[in-house]
Amino acid sequence: MNIGSKIEARGPANNTRRIDGSATERIVEALREAIVTLEIPPGAALDKAVLTARFGVSRFPVAEAFTRLKAEGLVDIRPQSGSTVSLIRLADARENMFLRRALEGEALALLATRNNAALLAEVDNNLRCQKMAVEAGDRPGFHRLDLEFHDLLISAVGFPRMRATVERARLALDRVRRLLGTPRRHALTFAEHSAIAQALRKAEPEAARAAMAAHIDSVMVELETFAVAQPDVFADSEPAAERL
Image (cartoon, rainbow, N blue to C red; front, side):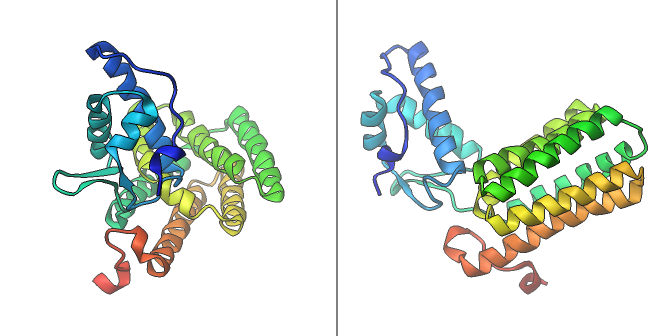
């Protein structure tokens, strides 16, 4: 696989450390985008020589980019055998889903006690756009609207640290969301989002909490099923039921 051909290079870099820092940023951004969107699949080798030529830089910013992406759990660095795109860890996905289930469920329960007409209007508009994206088969558009839907709700609570925690968990799940981003999953997600909005409209905290939990649990169940069918994408594809 020619990894370099999948990544857009954005201009030359000079040899100063300051410019190397700028080069590192754009390499990180390009690689992250390619990895998260699955243009570069889990397990793929990352060739430093190809990337240095592709971006027109020295080896230093490429090595720094690999180190940054390793810290994000996206790249594995093995000194003797080269660097690869990290396989997806189900254990990490379960933990991040757990965090989202707990925090977003409580956020929804809190929002259901408030009469926030402006929020409901924004949610309804987002859902209308989601419906159009599902009907048009617009997968990138639906993905963006899905993110906006959740961020609308979390932001409305007004707790910045909670929002940051949810955002970190969400970012760690981006590749998972792309893997499961089929037309069927998008239709199910739209229905689950609609149930969440309905509970908010009715001002029912327990129903809102349960609707969010059901949505996140549904995605996790689908991921476990996907891991059984496609174990080569995962570092730990043993289903949860088999570990009990």
